[in-house]
Amino acid sequence: MRILLVEDESRVAGFIARGLREQSYAVDIARDGEQAIYHATVNEYDLVILDVMLPIKDGHAVCRELRGAGFSAPILMLTARAAVDDRVAGLDSGADDYLAKPFDFKELLARLRALLRRAKVLRAQVCRVGDLALNTASHAVTRAGKPVSLTAKEYALLEFLVLNEDRVVGREQIAQHVWDENFDPFSNVIDVYIKRLRARLESGGASRLIRTRRGEGYMLSANPGDADD
Image (tube, rainbow, N blue to C red; front, side, top):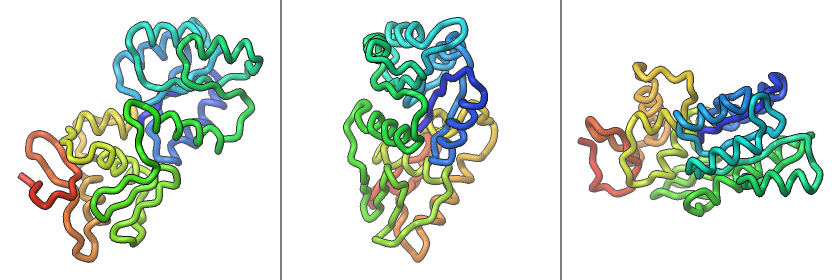
C-alpha cells in the first residue's frame, strides 16, 4: 500500500517513514500543506497520515480541501493536539481517525491496518487464493501450509496482487501502489520482482499463480484456465 505522510518535522517524518517502509508500505513525504495537496492530486494513495500543525496550510484546511475535491482514501490525523475539541475538529474536517503524539508505533500500525481494512471494500485479515494464504497483519505468507519467506517489497507486491485477485493490473497501477515517487518508470524492476515472486511461490513444483497478460500487465489467479498469454 502507498501512503502519503504529511509532516514538517524532518526527524519525526524520517522516523515514521522508516518504520512504515520496514512494514512493506511505500511512503511519500510532504513537508507542508500545499505539497500535501499537490501530491494527493498527482498520485494515487491508499491512505494519508496528516499532521495538523503545518506550514502554509494546516492539516484541517488540507483535509477539507482534499475531501472537497473528492479524495476518498482514509486520512489519519497525527498530531500533538490531544484535547477533545481538537479531535472533534479533525474528524469534522474529514479525517477518519486521530492519533495524538507521542504515540506507540505499534498502535499507529494497528490503526493503519484498521483503516485500510475499512477502505472501499471490507477485507479479511487473512486473504486466500487457492492454497496461498496471506496475513495482512503479520505479513506471514504460506503456500500449501508451508511458510514463504519474502522481502518487504516482495510482500508488498504480492499483497497488491492478492487484493486484486483475478484482475489484470498494469505496471503503472503496480508502481502507484507498491513503489514511491522515486520509482523509475523506464526500469524493469517490476518484472524482476514478479520473477522473484514466482520463484518463491512455485518452488517444489507448485502450480503457477501469477499470470502474464502481454501488453496489459499481471494477474494473480488460482484458476487453471487463466494461462499466460
